[in-house]
Length: 143
Image 1 (tube, rainbow, N blue to C red):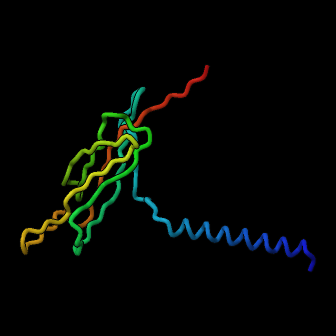
Image 2: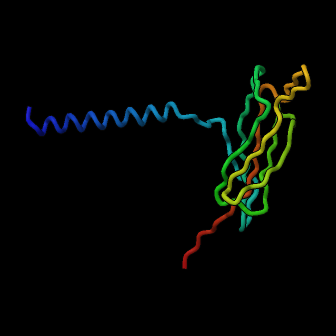
Image 3: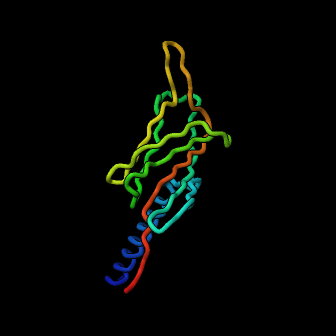
């Protein structure tokens, strides 16, 4: 075995190992296949995007709060994020929250309430969360 053959075997091993690590990362990473986004309205200055994501709150949940949060690239100042939560197509909870200068937003809501010995699960089961965001529209032009 010559030095060149050893180098190529080592190179093949590094490439195969790299592909294995890449594939493992892709397979383990969370995916948002159930997330759908669409443009609801658009004009020359901005567009309104609607994103729908599933939410599941287990019946044995012990946490009192839930949250919807995210980051908007190119958000329009002065336009809040609208959050609508539905269960089986019926509206359950609507809210709006402001967008920070960096494009981040967060809305916390009560999913469990405790009053003395009485525990009330405000949210339990499967829900659809619709998030409405207003983003800038950029037109491309040439001189």
